[in-house]
Length: 315
Image 1 (cartoon, rainbow, N blue to C red):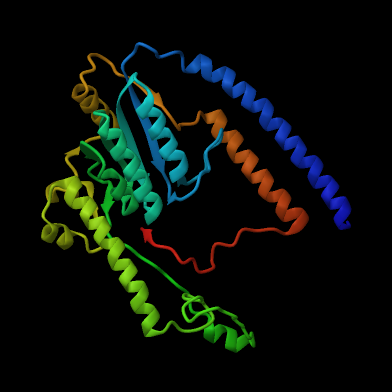
Image 2: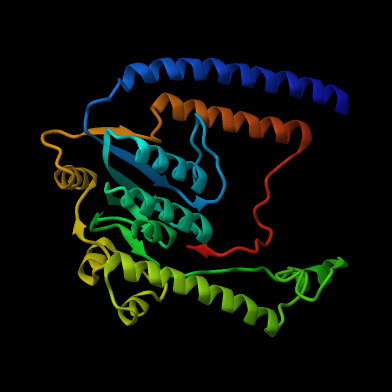
C-alpha cells in the first residue's frame, strides 16, 4: 500500500473519530446537565483529583489521561476559587510525583485558593509521594490512609550513558554544539565531573525549595525536615507519628472534616471537577487505543520515552 493511499485511509479514519467525539461531546454536555444540576445558592465542596504522574502542560478536555497535567489542575483550582458557592476544596491525591516545576505550579495555585479564605483539605490515596506530597503542603489538614505511601521528599535527575554500547555496535555519534555545556546530559559520552557539579547544584537548589515548602506547610524546623527528607517513603501511620500528615482516615473522613471546618451543616454537596463516569472512561480508553493503533499500523509511529530528559523530578 503506497503512502498516498495510506494517507487517504488515515484521513477518513481520523475524520470518523473526530465526528464520533463531537457526537459523544454533545451527549456528554446533555447528560452533564442532568447529572450535575444547578448548584447556585448551595454551599458546595469542590473535589479535585491528582491521579498518576504530575506533568507540565495542559492535557485537559472531555477525556482524562493517566497523568495529571499542571495546566488542567490549575484551571480547575482557579475555577473553584472564583465560584462563590464553593466553600472549600477537597484535594484527592493519588500520585507518585513527577515534574518539580509542575508540582510547584499546582502548589502555588492552591496557595492562591487559600488566600481567598477558602479551606483546602487533602485526602491521600494509595500514594502521595514526592511531588504528590509537595502539592499536599498547600492545605489546612492532611488525611492519609494508614497504608498510604507518602513522603519521598527529594529531587532526582537521571541520565543514561550509551557510549560503550555505541562502540560495540559501531555507532559514531557526532554532536555539533555552540558552547561547552550545550550537550550536557548527552548519552553518547560519559558525564564530566564539572557537568555533574552543575547538575548537583541545580538538584540541591530545588531540594531546598521542597524543604522550605515542608517547613511552611508542616510548621517544622529545617533541621527536623532535612532529617526526614532523605528520599525514603513512609506509610501513612509512620507519617502521622512523624508529623508529616495530620490524621488517619479515608476520603469521607476528610470530607466530613472539611464540611465542619467551613461551616456546612448536614450532608455536604460535592462538586467533582475532573472525575469521569464509567462511560467517559470507556470512550476515552477506546479513542486513545484506536488512535495509537492507527498511527502504528499505517506509519509505524510509536512514542519513545527512553531518551534522556534534562529535567528535575519529585519522584
